[in-house]
Length: 201
Image (cartoon, rainbow, N blue to C red; front, side, top):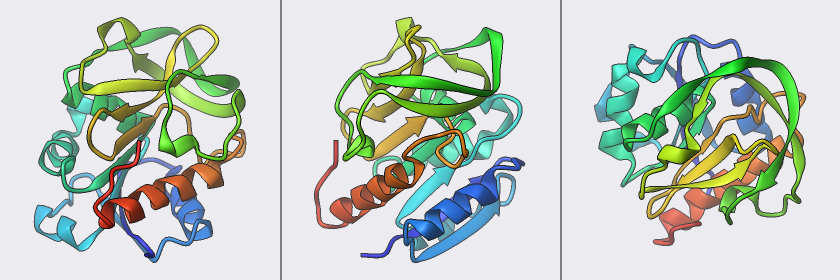
């Protein structure tokens, strides 16, 4: 199966780097929609949804938050940076403002729990960060599971406990991130498994 992917663009310069990464991972169709130009009727034309990085906070993108709530049970969703933060807030988690802004910084991430996004990827590995807010690990909710973290314990990725909804705080499309292409291939494989009635964890 070659997946049809919809990217929701939150006014971010990295969005078309995500498009390029998806092309390298052999996604069949890639469409980009601005966050304020989402038509929910067209979502069913796609197999997976990527929520792009972007400025500001999740509350500034109500249509994207609504999309998660409407489709997380039926579509595979991958949130990147701001996109992960949206998933956190949608399921009742909390964000906090980092004392040290992580813009253009490379760090190592360490495994916290098994996750299909990291199949064939060895921990620890290096990732590129561009964020000033993070998930509060002390306010984790039952529906979400932290799957990787920094050495300081800051959550770097998550998954839904039941559905194919994933988030990464780092940027897989960044030149500073190792294994970004493999991660994207793994997500596309999750979509393929879902189409066959399976749920990847």
